[in-house]
Amino acid sequence: MALSVKHLLDTVSLTADDITQILDTGRSFAEVNSRAIKKVPALRGRTIVNLFLEPSTRTRSSFELAEKRLSADSLNMGGSTSSVVKGESLADTIQTISAMNVDMFVCRASLAGTPHLIAENTDAVVINAGDGKHQHPTQAMLDLYTMREHFGHLNGLKVAIIGDLSHSRVAGSLVPALKTMGATPILVGPPTFQVSDPAYWGVEQTSDLDAVIPEVDVVYLLRVQLERMGGAVIPSKREYNRLFGVDERRRALMRPGSIICHPGPMNRGMEIMHEVADAPEAKVLDQVTAGVATRMAEMYLLLGGEGVAH
Amino acid sequence: MAEQGPKARIMDERDMRRTLTRIAHEVVEANEGIEDVALVGIVRRGADLAELLADELEAIEGTRPPVGSLDISFYRDDVVRHIQPVLHATNIPFSVDGKDIVLVDDVLYTGRTVRGALDAIMDFGRPDTVQLAVMVDRGHRELPIRADYVGKNVPSATDEDVRVSLPETDGAMAVEIWDAEADQPGGER
Image (tube, rainbow over the protein chains, first blue to last red):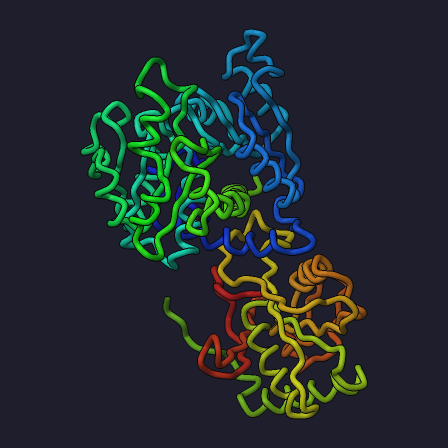
């Protein structure tokens, strides 16, 4: 078996060797994606179920393209069209679909732990495509890929993760993955967005963005997720933008050669200003491109090692 | 890993260099020059051999044909049994359309690698012809595939392992027969 894990549920379980394998294999798939014919028969005849219980455009299209380019057969199930709304329990739904002999579930859900619940109810491989505020491991892999392609290495990089830390599954996956690869994450956000226990992750946390920006290689902006916030955690968009948004002034503070990443979709005018979002340092579209290649690598490595016993 | 050493050495460096020169002449003859010829080596040792063959062609014709490399991991028909991280990227820095492609590999055995390579080449375009050059043909074909240029026919048993060593990958140049190990690292299957 190639990876040390059967499922891709979080980044905490991944070893440095696992992550390196995903990034290296992703590079070969990036070459496939640059061809006129962007398709290889690697997962021909394998069936993958995309179970998206929460709205998603970019992650879902990225997975669907990755599956098509691997020649896998895919089945798309959304929250509103599935039996979940008819009152069937998720465990029953998963057991039912599993009985149709599928090889993999790709799951996006608003409740943390849903992918783990799926994994307990099927023999198929499960990839977590984002669960609540918990984890989004495939996002972390594409982020690491983008950073490694730019800098040539991950070891020793300093990465400021800025914004809505406490609601962010992106930070939840990225922080442990960066640490595994020898990089140093630094959390930056207003007190209401900060995580309650940065020591749990073994990282620094601050609200002084201007002091951090000149020190780091990567300025990683999180999306302010207005839909995940209960009440008034920030006074106003304008105030957030003034204190934590990256504008031309803050861009000028960045170290030469450093880059800006954002998992998307960007709130232009809030965490990132228009002119900065389109600046050469912003690698947002490179991240999107890397997403298809790294997801191909994850599915290929997870399904390839699954054996012939189906 | 305790290894006893090779059972037999079939070719040494001088044999292999002479053979490459001969194959280069055959390629030139069959294609009436190398104007449209391009070499594509199957990683790893096929890619090493393609570079050596390009050297020979350059010595004969005065121009060096384009050389590419092909990793066929994504095209294998046995991916579930032989999963490996893919480190040797495919790199074909020219258009294959209208070219006479000479696929290069070290050992021709079951033919399954070549089948995968043919699929992969076709994904890059439509060559005029695809030809196959191998250093060793050891028999035991499982598919209707044959080589156009063969360095040496080496009748072998399935419990033997035919190993080609090349300077780039192995630091030496030889063709040897070994006893197959249960878990052989570089076998063709």
